[in-house]
Image 1 (cartoon, rainbow, N blue to C red):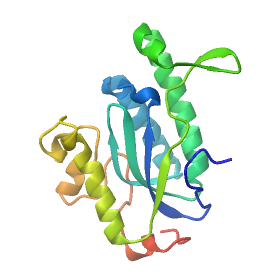
Image 2 (image 1 turned 120 degrees about the vertical axis):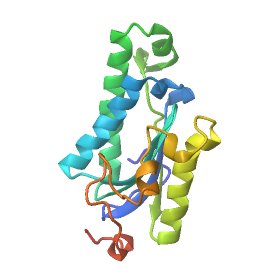
Image 3 (image 1 turned 90 degrees about the horizontal axis):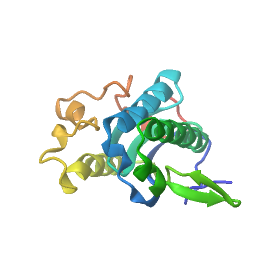
Image 4 (image 1 turned 90 degrees about the vertical axis):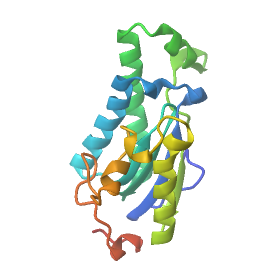
Length: 187
């Protein structure tokens, strides 16, 4: 059963995805935790599971524009893996206050939850929608007051786009072509 508000199709499509940290805890402000997210995305790209066109890792959520055949399964694995790593990191660094804010109970058992259960995928099927979502992602750190220009934000690939490069350590062969906007077509 899907935990998202929309059911993701199993065909290859481009999606704008937002997923938030439980209780909007600003746990991704710690560099190690943001690196866990970045490294996990890099792994998925290198594995060939996804192609990332745009991303931003904010203090309490992430935005992605990605292409994948099985986005729902990948998001479930990504969230499970990164949650375990971030929780382990907080435990190792004695960040008990942060951990206490992630506490929840399931079936009467105490546990920790990093991510909200839902995430918000939006299928992108037109270049104009792609451009709008990409602009939204890149301006997020500016609107949040973290930087004055999108290109200054470290946890985003906005600088690469500003320089006319459509690829960074997450994106390999990420140049868009018209076939990217035809559902079911792998490029």
